[in-house]
Length: 380
Image 1 (tube, rainbow, N blue to C red):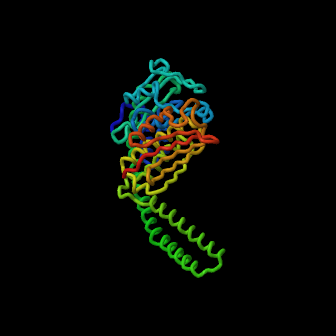
Image 2: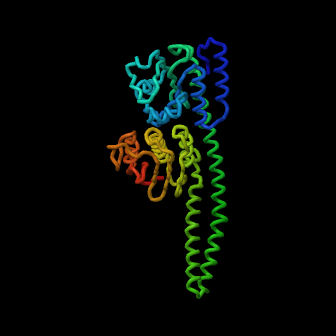
């Protein structure tokens, strides 16, 4: 990696220090916020943001900000999706430097409650050979515009950030591999010890029922046997969810957890995850990728529009593959179809389901919030 032209020794030292800090292993959400904070400090900006692109590379799925007060962010409402000047970097990933943001013909009006912003500097971040996202800075402190040196600093930081993001993803995959191996061991233990012992207890109770003449006692014994059968079924479902597919890099549950981890910062909370059935063994890699794309888009919609405080994610595998997202937010926007919503970027989600022979419904829940149910036939 070669440095761009940076003439100020102090700023060059600050850049090198920042790059060295990026080498410290950290979770991806923390790393992304650290990159934005570092960019703001290096370039002397008032506000900074990092927009993470969606799977299609056509819009922003995450938008991490620095410099805005929490109350101001809440009053602004929906996160940007990549229109106006922000979208220029998505269409053509090259550095952009503007003395006045409003002078650009692509500039769009700021939403109500948004602070005025003037000078602008944006650069792409590439990770793994692809554009991962974009860094945006506004309002240079002590000057009317960002300098060429500011741009060079940010371009170099973007290169280093891309490498660090790639490393963070690799470390995450390695941790998931270790986790899956431990889960496989636990699954064997469950099957070889717990289930076998429960079976033995159930057989003993059934034998005892044959010798009992008291009807009340017999009913209680029968009820206990039924409860044991139900417990065994639940444990079997747990074993399925703990099982390893043999393609650890394609583990659906591991990917679900990774997406959730990435979205925590944008959501402001950590969603709850529940899995039922052989999620990691019965779902093929192609369908797993579709589920992850739908999950990412669904969570991005919650972050942008729902004003939610919690999200429940439910992945079910039986005769069908079902992904359900339930939030406690404001519900569907007035005028949006209560059955299949195509606004708020949900058109992609519906199209993915239909392409696989399935369906998608988005409903306002009684009592508030929204439920997205994405269902497709199961094809290993």
